[in-house]
Length: 305
Image 1: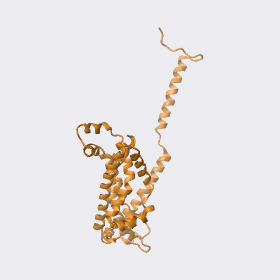
Image 2: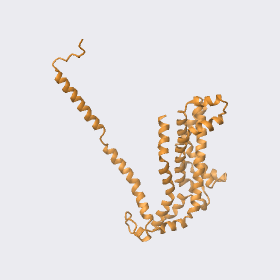
Image 3: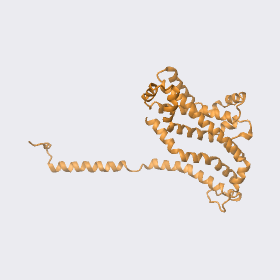
Image 4: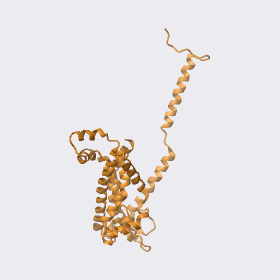
């Protein structure tokens, strides 16, 4: 019994083989076409990278120049001679150790408070999603993302003054509140991917709700907690508007606010100002470079799951 398929009228076996070879060659060229570089996207990415790297290069070179070199009009030239006088003067003018300690205090409270409150809230919402109150609470928090601080600045300044929170502690509390919406969104998406059977087995063994959260759920939230903490740290460390409006004592201002002293109309100590900028942003750059893999991993896990 022959299993060979009949040829179509007007074709031969040789013609069929040639057509198959042509199809394969066409498919191969199509596959290689899919592997080609997307030049428009590449150009856009290169321009975006340069928009960050060029200002960073200027900041580094200007910070290590002398005052005479800083005002010669050539911002892209390398420092010659190499000088650290700008860092010494910036350290003294900004009282860097005190300002750094204030910034660390505000950032630490922001990170810890955001992780704890957001994880509590997200756990309650994710495990009670069928209840209307919790579901609408989630939507309410999402709506708060569209209310930036400058819109509510006047009322927040008034309320913090009445509550005697016109200090770094009040700034940290407000940072936590304004980070809560986005953090709850990330935690909720991650929590809804965790099987409820894990918690049910723990409850069968006699664990309470608090024990289930702290011993089972919260350790599972470690990747997302790292992501939320990094976002909260960067937002708190780089914030200028909120500390400048809330903190009434100039001696308790954060590093970004103190940089304003170098932005006067007649200031030409560019090496000092750029050295101060570099010292202020160095911790944020270091933290992000060290922890960026957790940022991408946490966001991707929450999105895929």
